[in-house]
Length: 251
Image 1: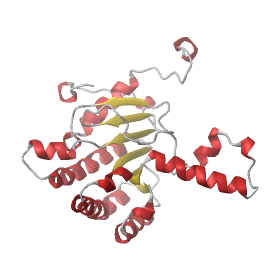
Image 2 (image 1 turned 180 degrees about the horizontal axis):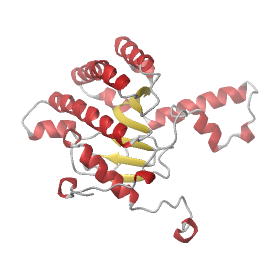
Image 3 (image 1 turned 90 degrees about the vertical axis):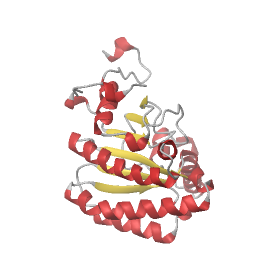
């Protein structure tokens, strides 16, 4: 972990940017509590950070940015907080849609839609349609998402195909599973960032991050900014990605 605000003059190799960055946006509640505020204030401030980081990722030319907005486990939080979060997510995305369109950003949503309030889902789906022509950054919101849900859902669909005789169980491969995941439309993350300091992946993209580079910062999500994103990318660029090979083989 690095204290990013102490690192000046971040120089990035623009030819070696991660194609896909995934972020576990943690620390909204702790940010608010440290200031004597209600947790909801942290979530509101966190929305502003989403805008900042989306704009910075778009400027840099990142292909995909996946943000862990609401996990399936989050449904177990107090109902008032859940309701407020659902409203906040839909309202924020609607408000940002014109700028997403202007900046050539397309929006995608992954997660268990069956658990989402009908109004929230309809509003998000409208934003996805409205931004579908974007050919720049793809902003992916993981809402009502968990990796165990995703893998279980993929297993059910593959099993149904096998039971119907459309695929041979002996021929199931890694690619078969990947094609049936919610993330089939995009590459696996090159870089996974977690804000807030906790050293865990919290049921997020477990299949997809098998060889992602991990970066954890103590900075709470509402305080995370474009400079901090660049620091994380610079740290990523200093690493040698070996994918199970030796360093000599990679060279």
